[in-house]
Each structure stands twice: as C-alpha cells, then as structure tokens.
Image 1: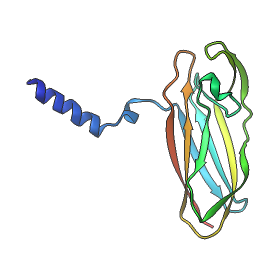
Image 2: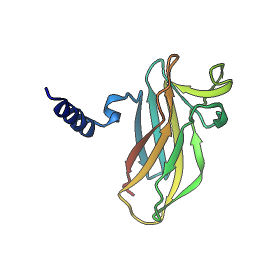
Image 3: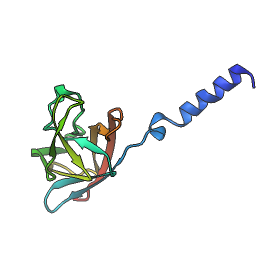
Image 4: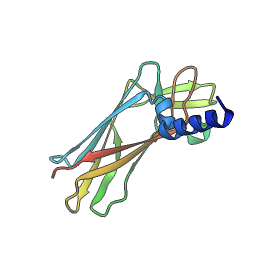
Length: 150
C-alpha cells in the first residue's frame, strides 16, 4: 500500500471514530427531573476498581474533582447549592502528596431549580477525572440532557 494512501485511511478513521470511542469512561450516568420536588437528580455508577474525586479535594494537589455545570438558560434558576448525597471517602494519596476525597461505586447528587417558563430539557455538563490504582484517565466532559415535563 502506498504511504500516502495509508496515511489518508488513518486520517479518515480518526475523523470517523473520535478519541472518546477509544477511551473508556468507567462511569455510567443517569439523571431525572422530579417536577414534584423541582430537583434534578444525577447518579453516577462507577466501575469496580475505579474512583472519581469530590470537590472537597484540594485542586492544587493534581486530581481534577467533579464539577457540575447547568447550561445557562433564562428559563431556569438554580435554587441553593448543589447537594452531594453520597459522602466521599478521605484517602491519603502519596502520589498526589495529600488527602484526596473520592467516590467509589456510586455518587448521587441533586440540584433544586425553579423553572421560569416551560422548557423541554436541561443540559448539564459533568467534568471529572477517573482513576484506578494504576492510572488516571484525562479529564472528560459528559453532557446530560435531562427531559423536563412540568
């Protein structure tokens, strides 16, 4: 096969199969809006042997803690702070040189909101880094589209 043809085929494969298809997430996310409580509930099921970092973790240590960002939308307002229902575990991590706070198995969180007008969905972006005992994967964004049926 000619070198330029081989390079072209590789280039097309990269365009057709983005890096996210080659990497593994290790967290399965589910979400729901509860109209009776006006809350967005998000649950992350974390694969065995993997963990993600709580915002309690000092960002200067190195690991990227979970951040949750609601898409800016005039139709809704966040009420109060994001609440983490799953308490993270404190762990002395010599690799990062300090105490980190991690979730294993599951993380659950809720955010109360007020809808100012009717919308079909709420967009939420989760940014985090997932690690096991051997490696950490690069930080990733996961976008959830949560249906709203007021």
